[in-house]
Length: 136
Image (cartoon, rainbow, N blue to C red; front, side, top):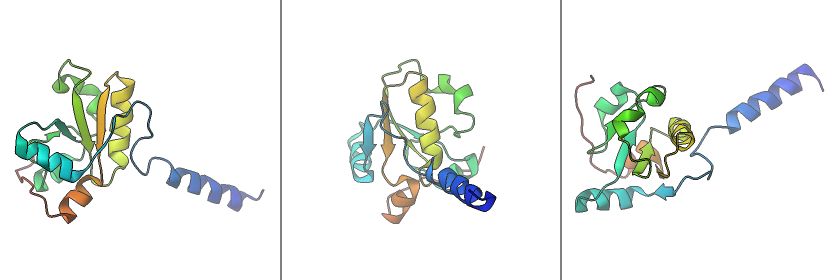
């Protein structure tokens, strides 16, 4: 196989991995934006974990969401509390960073992990409410 073909195959393999929610290795499932909004309105929302950057979070986030960027989550797990069975809905802008965070949480023994369907891109496109704040 020629070098250019190998590089093309390598590029395709890299592009196809990590481009969506984590595969179903102990991930509880997905929660739709409609379901999450209903639970927020009813006052029984799960922990909402926004793994985007602080700047993205400040520009608009789901009410009540906790911001811990995916690249520092491993060092900040204590902020999620001690209950490894807590229901946590993870999201980012499009799904890739959330998938990384979900895998980390599962590897750390969390069992109640869910992925927000469509992430913030869908949340925004549906016109759902967001909170804005100054970046920390």
